[in-house]
Each structure stands twice: as structure tokens, then as C-alpha cells.
Length: 379
Image 1 (tube, rainbow, N blue to C red):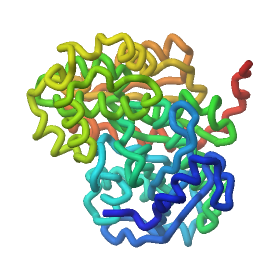
Image 2: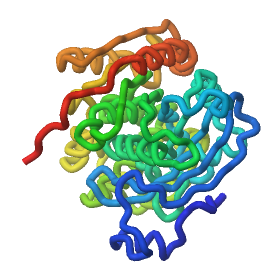
Image 3: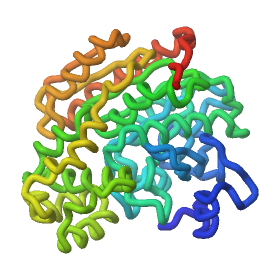
């Protein structure tokens, strides 16, 4: 389904050429907006779909989309804090953008969004780069800096949305799995990219902290579709590099087909198929360019200056708990204000088990004073 908020083909071209359609967009500027109804979402009040200006991982301007939901209590209590909720990976294209799933009542993580709305928080749900916007896909799955920019610029957009009066609202970020990856990258990039935001803290579960280790573990197994999705998403994010040189002709066809699939289709279509089936070498991740890409995508590259709560399931067979423990150790070595919780359950079970504490931690972070440290100096 085409999003009627999307710029036309000529407007997208003008956007990338420097704003020749009458505006010079800055990160966080609202390009389009419309009011929507979310009757199937508990605790929801007024809601809006936005298209806003952001930056890709290597600073190229790009439009992105998302949904903003005010709690039903807003008219009684006034605007509250802003939560940017980062959904887990839903797919590379098609109708799997969170804004479309929320609109038709099929967003699988709606229960977590409703729990935050019940707190009186305004919830902003970014689609991420490449989802919800035609001509800009596939989704840049696993690209950490791009995800951080999409999160932080969406928060900027929400603050200036006239209908919400949220310009001074404090901000927290929450996500799970790939959404947890977006959350911790937003924390790491906060003072570098968006020091104007009053970010108070982050909660992140089952974080994909090391995509290289993850895809190696998934390749050729039941979750092999995610390995292919990682190659496609990172290939899109690093399109300025010759990342596609490892693909065979069959591989190029597989990438084209998978780029419009949701998660269910990816897992069903590519189950047990190793990436070597589509590449000129059986171990494509050992290619020098791809080694560089994956090394550039590990977390803990910068030090978050806001508190971070991490949680993980000890029986998680998709994202091993060891990856979360390693991120916790790296953040602790950096001096991050940190908490950690393990749950004796599997991947999906930990998402449910950890939600209550994640919200409680975020609520406690909102009671703290704003971050006062200045942004790092650049030369």
C-alpha cells in the first residue's frame, strides 16, 4: 500500500538535489503530516503519520516516515514525555512498515506501545530508513548509525509537531532485538548528532551488538533469511562501496526478490539456504570490503552519557545471551550508567518478561535532570 504522505517521484529527486521544491530541509524537519485514527490501539488518543527529514549513515539527506501517538489522557493532563519505540525487524519491504501495521491494527508489538501510552507518554514509532517510503528501499537492516539518525530526527520532528506542544518534552528510547540495536546506537550518537535533544535514558533488549557474529551464526540454518536480509540491508546502507561484487547472477535475482519481503516470507523462502548459494565465494563475510562493513557496525563505538538498561533471555537461540553480556561488559568498561537483567526464557519470552522493568527503568530516568555534558569537539 502506498503511503499518501510520501513525496512524489519528482519531490524525492528534488529533495536529494538540495531542496528545490521550496524548502531546505534540516534533520528533524516535518515534510508531510496527516492525522489518522488508531481505533484498535489501547490507550491511544490523537495520532499522526509523519514524513520527516533525516540523514543516512554517511550523512546523505533522506526522508523517512513514522507514526506519533498521543495518550488518550493528553487532553486531561497535558503533553507528557516522549518515548521513541523502535520495533524489532519486520522485513525489508512490502507492507511491513510499522506505520502501515499500526494503521491496520496488525502491529505485533502494539501491547508494548499501549503500555507506554498508559503511562501518559507520547509514543513515536519510526519506520526506519527504507520502510514506508517508495523508491528508497529496501530497509537498511542492521545499519546502526542510520537507525540512530532515524530515531533522533524523529524525536526532533515530534517535538515541533504543532498539535502536541511537546517542544520541551524529555525523551526516552526503547527497543528490542534490531529495535534494541537502534536504541543503543541512538544513545551512542546522541551528543554527537543531536545534542539539542533532552534524552534521559534508553532501554534495550536482546541487542544485536555485533551483526558479523550474528549473521555467521544464522547463515545456512532456520534463520538464514535474516542473514540474507543483513547482507541486503547493509548493502543498501553502504551502497557507496562496491559491496555487491560478491553476488552471482542468481544472487542478484535473490536480492531483488528478497528486498520486498516481510519477515515471514524471508524466513520461509530462504530457510537453510547458505549465503554462499548466492555469492562467488562460500564465505562472503570474509571478503575484505564486508569485513570492513561488519567491523564498522559493532556497538560500543561511542560512550552513551545517559543511563542504559539492557536485558536478554538466557535461552535465546536467535541472538545469543553472550552478545548482550559482552555489550554490557564493554559499556561498563566505558563507565556507562548501566543496569542488566537476564530472564530464563527464549527470545520472544524475554521481550514479554522484560517489558515491565524496561518501562519502570525509563520512568525512573525521566525523573533525572537533563544531560549537561557538552557534545564532543570535532576537528
